[in-house]
Structure formats: structure tokens, C-alpha cells
Image (cartoon, rainbow, N blue to C red; front, side):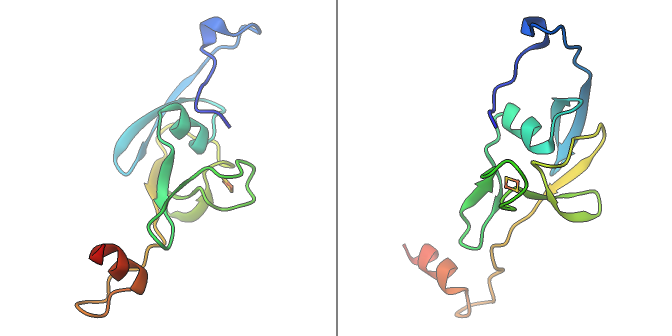
Length: 118
Ligand code: FES
């Protein structure tokens, strides 16, 4: 999957773009009908929208629905693969994180504690 998209006026098959807009964590993202949520995010220049357990950024890895690296919440539905879900006008998308919550002073997750100490 590429963050670039062919502009309609440059498309050799005469495609007509129908624009759509959805929000990700309250920020508007523009796309075109038929694009996946991940495709629209990549086209908007956003390469990562989730955090793994270590806090490492995650976005599209496989792009075909296998790795689950691109998970988002769409409306009330959690764990939606952004590379498989077509964006719809008005979708409310929120990002997810698998990073553990700090457990209080002295009880932080070992990985988080190591990051904070460095
Ligand atoms: S990028 Fe692998 S499931 Fe979406």
C-alpha cells in the first residue's frame, strides 16, 4: 500500500472521485469513496496510528488483513482492521493502544520504567 494516490485528473481510466471525510481522534481526514481507512490515513501522510505494548508506533504492516497492526475503533466497534474497512463519510475513528497503563509510583510496567529512566 502506498501513501500516494493517483489524482483523478491524471487517471487514464477517467475515474470520478467522490470525496468523503471522517475523523480520527477528532481530527478530520479526507479520502475518496472506495479507500480503506488505512489508505486514507496513508494518503494523508499518517504512517502510524496505534501503539504496541512497548509504545512502538504501528500502522500498516501487511496491508491485507493478516497482521492486525492497523487496528482502530470505528464508532463503537473495537479492533477494526483499518486496511480492510472501507472508509465511510462521517465515520468516527479512534486510535487504540496496547501500551500498558502505568500502575502507580514504583509499580510501572518494566518496559515503561526502562524508557522513563533512559
Ligand atoms: S495492516 Fe495487517 S491487518 Fe491491517
